[in-house]
Amino acid sequence: MLVVTRLRTPDAGPAAEADLRAGLLHALAILAAKPGYVGGEVGRNVDDPALWVISTRWENVGSYRRALGSYEGKLHIQPLMVHAVDEPSAYEVVEEGTDLNQAQPRSIG
Image (cartoon, rainbow, N blue to C red; front, side, top):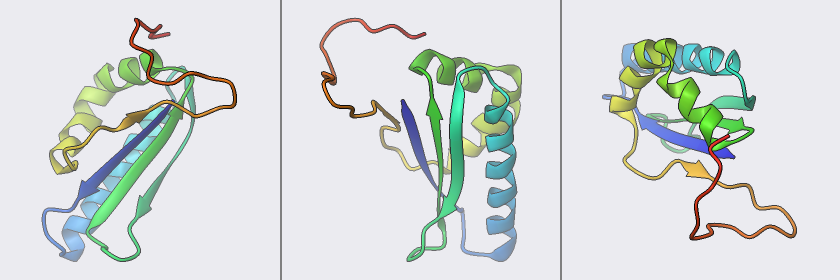
């Protein structure tokens, strides 16, 4: 599964940008140490420098939710989410031969 979270700095000042960048890189390091993590990156929008993204890949949704709900996640990652753009962030990977968004219970891993 993919998780794509866009965040906006509270202002365009260099200090706010540096703080968000450091926070996102720290969040990525925390997530990378959790079971089920496959990969991820932090990015900054090329047209709107106040817009950032943290994108991660997971074996399943349960792994992501457990990582975010861990002690480290609650302490260091969830406070960053005050800057998150309010939109859905979890996506199923589209692969040949798979049915997406089934109206049935799914394993959380």
